[in-house]
Image (cartoon, rainbow, N blue to C red; front, side):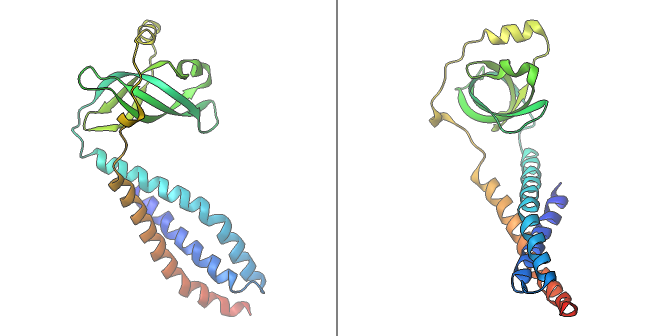
Length: 203
């Protein structure tokens, strides 16, 4: 995952080099082609590259956790679809109520079958799992048994204010951005001599 993210970030940088070279040669058909291909490819390649780098960083940091997991009921404060498909991706704002320790707010994501969507509306209750040392990394557990799901729905959880929200440390996000930008810069610098060398036969 890390290697794929690095490769794509390098390609993103190379695409930026193609955009620059193409912009300086818009009078030729090849220059226009370079510019158009680069402009269309760079955003998508960049999005995928940073997503893979972020996932690799989360996996790396997860290895430093306690290795323990705890389960707790959580109240759904808000629920919003962030995509489409038979398993609808949802972004959930949750109040998690552990058996020990204070309740906390956190954002989580879940892929939910459309048939089960009613169970994930605001005000509902879900079961979550998390590492107590990394409380921002919450995974929603799907309840398959009717009795267990029914008992969970009866759990009453009081909302806590947004000030009690836990989030991923900024250092993790900065590391991902720095790595992506560094790889992009390397790809950009390495691609320029190639694009400039290839331009001579086009004239």
